[in-house]
Length: 103
Image (cartoon, rainbow, N blue to C red):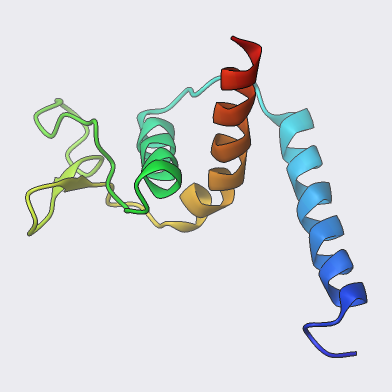
């Protein structure tokens, strides 16, 4: 089996769908922590702009100095890893499309 074969792609897709289903069943349905907001902002930027920006964010927000870090290009970025944001990007993409269809 090669990496590009259909059975391997089906395994990866099945694994992604399984992990997504477990996450959705275990999730509380809300964003409870401020780093969750930063993750969502980055995921939305990935989907809508193709960037890693965490905007909109407020770098002056007390108690959260690393949630909104200014970059050299003048935009603000989250000081967290990108894995969670990239994993959330498909959900943001399909959620935004579903919201447009439902209105």
